[in-house]
Image (cartoon, rainbow, N blue to C red; front, side, top):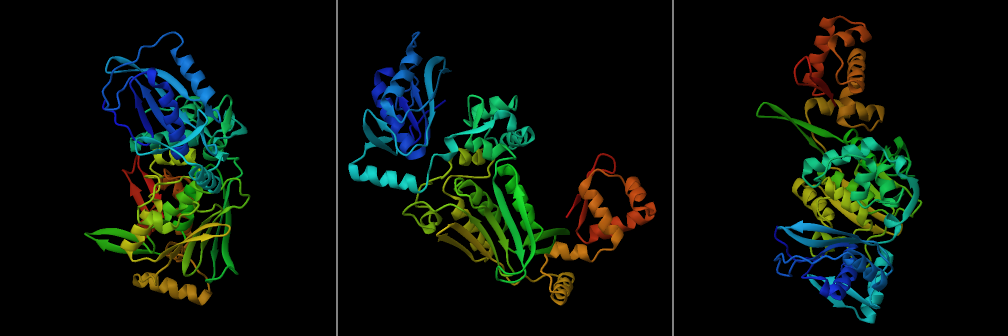
Length: 460
């Protein structure tokens, strides 16, 4: 294993450098809110090992407690590296500013810079304006409130991305490894991420025109943050236009706005919102645009362009939540979200706008004049006559006979349903079931995944 010092990783040859180590911890906390420090590793990465007595870990813990203010509670353990004992300290804290021995420092590259009075005042103002305490504070929710299925799904996704190296055993153990509990209670970030009763909502609506006057649909989503992301994704997918092309004898579907960018905006809106603000996140679909809003101010003294150009480091409002999203690739890299949205839209020729408004932050995707096949044009013409704004998929479903609608509904509820059971429930012959399945496949609304026995239905 080769080590190299970074803005969040500090290496010390031994505990003879304990004072310098404490300064490094405070500097990293002030810049990133979390980090790791090793005793027994030279600053060039060479493993030297650390002599460990009966009270070594206790003495380190006491020294950190005595000399860093506000107090932090790091995880201190012994780890064998290349056959040598080393001490590993993992620490985190999201208070306004941390001092070491009564002075303030900030991590710059792999160095700890002492701050002047003016720099301290500016850093405090920045943190107050954006990064705040909420996620790391203790909630009143017990560990038993956690949705175990949601936590299991999270671990599964994290292992698939290669960013989680442990399996699910118990909710307590997993949450402890994610730094989301203290004692028997969840931190606020843990409750938001994995409890369904977290009081977080997203209001979603489709409007008939370009104004927020007449709505065609309105819903309110609740659940874990991961649930909310999925619900918002589905809401947009089912209500925007999709173009269907045949490329190399395969059906290729293209959304009118790049969906990767829309998903990124949805994730960012939940990851960086102000959870102490009583307002809700909002997802609004107008005839000419899609708006994604979150009640949280943009980082102090920064503009969206600073991050789109890739010149600025990330300032995550909710670091614990951002860390969890990173493990499942919902957040790819801190500070790169706006740039990815911008690049995806530029590549697709779609206009996107980022706005700092008084109540929060708004991302707007402008919908193009979407052209499609003859079928799509008939649907659009029909929609104009009935004055109904619906997406291409919804229009296709409107054109189905009643039996086909019923079949799709049954297949959505039970993807494993057999043709025999469909025939029984809809009360038509097996030949009629086969004909309708064939028509649904031609319309691109139904696919069979796998063999007749052991496979399942995939519906649009």
